[in-house]
Length: 197
Length: 197
Image 1 (cartoon, each protein chain N blue to C red):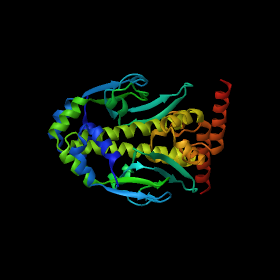
Image 2: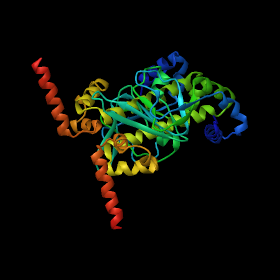
Image 3: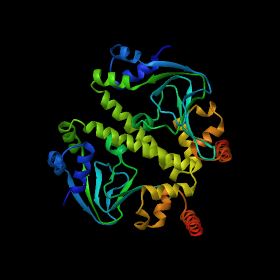
Image 4: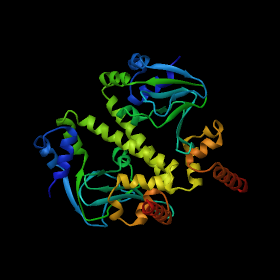
């Protein structure tokens, strides 16, 4: 399997030649995951980060009543992990499932160690990833606390332009924290407004 | 002003003698903030972290309709900042206000630089802080997406045992993402259950 996208992603973010880091990237494992299969299940320990070369993953939790809540969609060129479980060595609360047949790069601590040793600005890059993650989570909280269903939906389609076409509406609703009926209403309202323009 | 709690906090988390780091901690600024005054306002750039020696701060946002949403309460021995604004040098979306007369330590990048140079495990400590922050934000999203008002409230009083006695109920409701009436109902239900026991 090729690790083309991951190599390009890392090289560009670290401002390095691909040749310089290709041997480190080649030390990562790769996995083909069939639609519906899991990279992580709740109560397991998460030991990897997952970079999506092709396909689509979904991270979600299941609450006490058995209802699913989508934490994130993870399309090509995106990265997902449960940092809490990896860093603090705690069982995860999350599922990471292939929403489509996918090819993923498995990033483990060995890779991080190698990168830290060989690439001087890797720590800075990693620090930036952590801050980006914090910014995204904070924005999500803001939207959940203070935005209307319509505002959340508009933010979603900006962030994930093609995901609506790739997953059932129930999953999008579970990401937005609204009911599927609420999502339908928002979409109808917006369609009507565009029609009237 | 004494920097006693901050010094103790840093020394214990870095596993160092207080004497060893007291000169670095002494390089931080201190500020007395009166109840109601601001350490940060929306659209300003956040340049500091704030450690609360005494008192209580509150971080909140105001949505387009003018409604306040409490992001966090920050009592003694807690730390608050807007990492997005500090790290990415972007205007903040948040207010950080003194909820009571407070004494705070102002932590700037100069302090972080000094600590990084002098204390070998400071980067590791800082990394742990970032991961802790991610864990807390993730948990908040889980609660907003999947927990009932009662579950959120119970989580709140576990996390902030004495805050209920120090702030108006409307602020607690705005943290929980429920109406003040919803919060009253939850408290009445719980009081009734305890009475029946």
